Image (tube, rainbow, N blue to C red; front, side, top):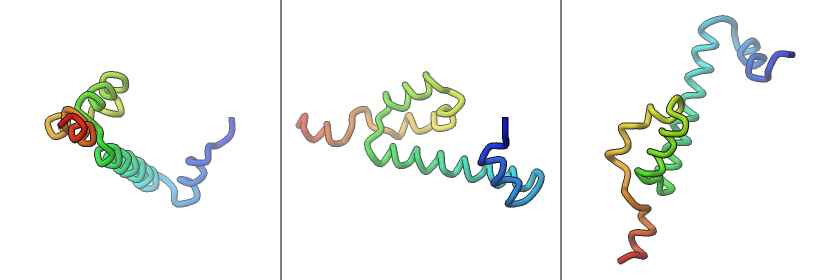
Length: 81
């Protein structure tokens, strides 16, 4: 097995723990941006609950959003009225 593209990027951008730290921070920031995009596109409590149930290692960090997310998608709420 060869070196992955990510490992090459880490090695090229600097060596050691500091480069790995910044790489991991970048990955976390991308995950947070993706989550916020999902929230803005209408994620519901049940959507997030299913994600947490399926892959808790990834989604559990957003568990506190369960209290903030709507029960139904906003566009569905308008259609029901």
